[in-house]
Amino acid sequence: METPKNETFRDSIGTLTEDGKRAWVYPKKPSGRYYEKRKIVSYGLIAFLFIAPFIKVGGNQFLMFNVLERRFNIFGFPFWPQDFYLFVISMLIGVIFIALFTVAFGRIFCGWICPQTIFMEMVFRRIEYWIDGDRNKQRKLDRQKWDAEKIRKRLLKWFIFLVISFLIANVFLAYLIGSDKLIRYITEGPFAHTGTLIPLIIFTAVFYFVFAWFREQVCIIACPYGRLQGVLLDNKSIIVAYDHKRGEAENGRKKFRKNEDREALGHGDCIDCLQCVNVCPTGIDIRNGTQLECVNCTACIDECDHIMESIDLPKGLIRYASEDEIEKKKKFEFSPRLKGYTAVLVILIGVLSGLLLLRSDVEARVLRLPGQLYEHKQGDIISNVFTYKLINKTTDTISDVSFKLRKYKGEIKLVSTSNNFEVPAQGAAEGTLFIEIDKSELSGDKNKLMIEVYSKDELIETTTVNFLGPRSYN
Ligand code: SF4
Ligand code: SF4
Image (cartoon, rainbow, N blue to C red):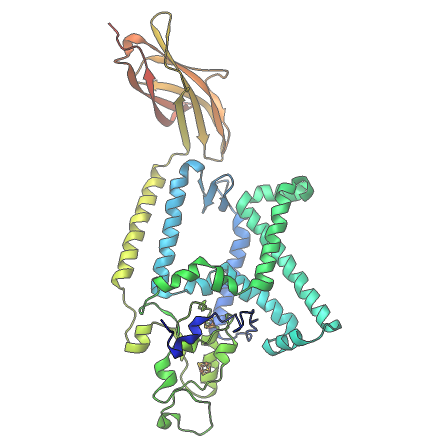
């Protein structure tokens, strides 16, 4: 189907020229009330991002995503590989929470919380403004030949970008392998750990590439969340929107002329100054309507507000609003779709809370040694051999650990270790054990036994095993 004429801007993305080349965006330096608020939120979040891996709660890193060992800490709560289902539920909650937020408030996450936007707009772009100057000076510098000034500015900028990319890569690593390990590797010297040094260099290069060159294209081309906007947003979602009713009126937008009665001429409040376009970091014209490139950064709201103020018109020609609010003057309502997402979210949070309460700090696994049935020993004793593994998810050593049989009279004998052993903090103890029971105690060839795990006299975990014996006991 052919695209309608006024929708042709949707045929290509704002950062590509007609012949498919990169159209470098030189956004004007934003200023205004939203920008000031975003600065506060952004620097707070950056501080949190840098500090979080070094905070400990009950001996656990506050946030850790050790993908290689499948160990995750969320808000100081450790998730082991055995708890992977809990981690998956937590991730699902996160995804539904973001979906719920997107349906209600559009890409508010992209503009205010996403690390890509925060680092790009509040760190790298601001350094660029500081070194290269605002939009026009940046364009001029780019066109300028490689003289002393350009070389000095470029080298300084690239060096600072590289240092920040290296810092971000280190923090990223602290989330991946744990901050204790990272600090140890740094103090022992990076060349003693080339297996970690190489990923660190790769991460630095990736961050440098993203922030120095790829930039807004992450949001436009690469980000999967950006792609979801088309299905998540509807006419009731609050987004950064241009009030086309007010901006265009009956006779459309028109350049500003002093002492002209725009209302009488039927022109809207948009004076076609293009400042909202110049300030946009993704290079789009918000007056065309909702576009996938828009990361809801609010820069165009601030810029248009300045213009409205300067020509004595009410602010808010571009503002946070839904399509319905602009078209039908309808206020925000809690739609059935939002109710559905909320219900799913509440159920998942309930399930997760229940599972977290039921989760024990110690996990015991006792499994039959493969290929072994039972042994009939002297004195009518039936013996089965098992392997055991005890996982200690806490940050304290569990001492004086012993096994006992519930209900059955019998003995548990550990191979090559005595009862009352230790399970190291955040570690495991494993080995082989024999269970010996007098055959008169058994009621068939398969008996379900419950094994209790004690630390000193405290019961810390229970597990069950199938104990095999002869078919007949007459
Ligand atoms: S900044 Fe406001 S007035 Fe200027 S072009 Fe954009 S919408 Fe129109
Ligand atoms: S259209 Fe406005 S809110 Fe969207 S990315 Fe551009 S400047 Fe930011």
